[in-house]
Amino acid sequence: MKINYSFLFIIPIALIMLMDNMFTELAAPSNPDIQYMMLNLLMKGGAALSFGYCWLKFQRMSKPMRMIYFLLNLYVIGMVVESMFRYDTPMVYPHVFQKLFVLYFSFFVYTFYKGNFHLKFSHVVYFIMAGFWLNVLIVNPHTLSISSFTGHERGVHSSSVYMLVIPFLYYLSNYFYRGKMFQLFMALFVLLTIFFFQHRTVWISTAVVLAFYYLLTKFKAEEPINFGKLVPIILVGIIAGIASSAFLFSMHPEIIDKVQASFSDMENFETQGTGGWRYKQWLSYVPFIEENLFLGMRFDGFELPIQFYREDLGRPVFEDGNGHHFHSFYIEILFYTGLAGLFIFLMLTWQTIKYVFRVRYMTIRQIMLLSFILSGFIFGISYVLPVFFYAVLGWAIVLMEEEVPAPVTYLKQSVWRRKLRLRELKENLLPPANKPIFKHN
Image (cartoon, rainbow, N blue to C red; front, top):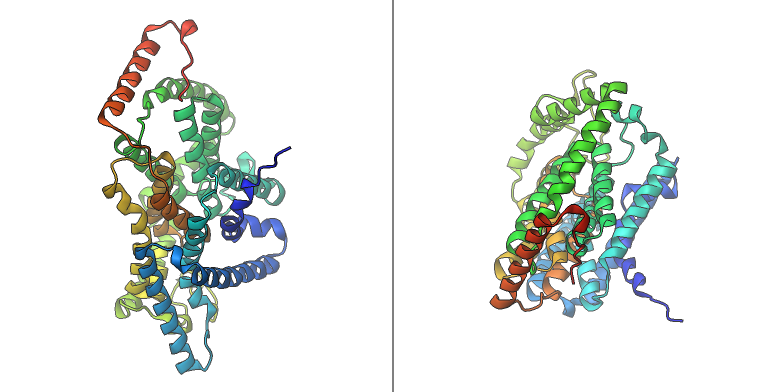
């Protein structure tokens, strides 16, 4: 009997994903202190492992990645020297160093899979789905109710729900290319889950992902997708949704009020909901960012008293001495590391984006991950980018460099287009009972 050991290759990227709240909560469901200790240990251990592994396997990196890695090390070394000079210790405030250490996770994942290009997309999807639903069923079962939805008791963190976008794209792509209804059901199930846990930033990010996914598959996919396959399903879904929602809303009219309130908060983010809270936080820290634009405040930022006050109590939102906890990736990275830190991050993301302009065709896996990476620019407006995002970024860079679409000639592309048109024509002309099931080869 042959045993397939390919699932073992998920371990490096899984080590980074384990730092998400949904996994630390599983380890200690009712003990936030242990969760924090685990996260702190994983962060420091992961950063040390990433740094050491990248030094050992430095030759695997492409020239652009080596240059970015050099710039990152240069900035970190500069901070270590500053810490030694001012405080007589190499890392006086680990909280500040972590803002750069997360970038090492991208290099670790990139360097490992550059030399071991065996990771299966399906294994990552199963890992995410298992972790998410174990968290919901074991740690947050109370969230699976209408009262939790209308009461805005989300339970699950935004980063965990954002991670579901990866399985959503996977199942959707499987439906388009394999034509299996179960894959479509799973895609819709994941999409409904994203909606149910009502993180509005994730809603917007998912919409952005779909927009990029559509554009990339339309103009860059090595084989075109028949989006017309969704039309009858969408129509049936709308009819079924209207019929079922009429019954549901008649029993729970508060659901409509809740959804309307959520969209109203998104439209008026400066004054309503958590958007208004974030906006006031941004205004509190923008002056400090402008004064330290290029290199950020670094250690001075950690020592700065909390600038964000609660209007009802007249005291800081957070306690001094624990760092500043921002609800925006851009505010955080500019506050602590300035344009220099943001520039290093943008150089990393550019390693995925540039392939759109360099190649004629992309594989569907490249398109899925690139769509997700691009959505991070939207998610980062309202939240700090989760740790797992940097792992996915490293994985995406490997795919861009290593995965090459099959050569597509003009003749082959024409044949694909012709088959697609014939398929649509037959589906429209044949009676429903006689419609064949086409499978993509």
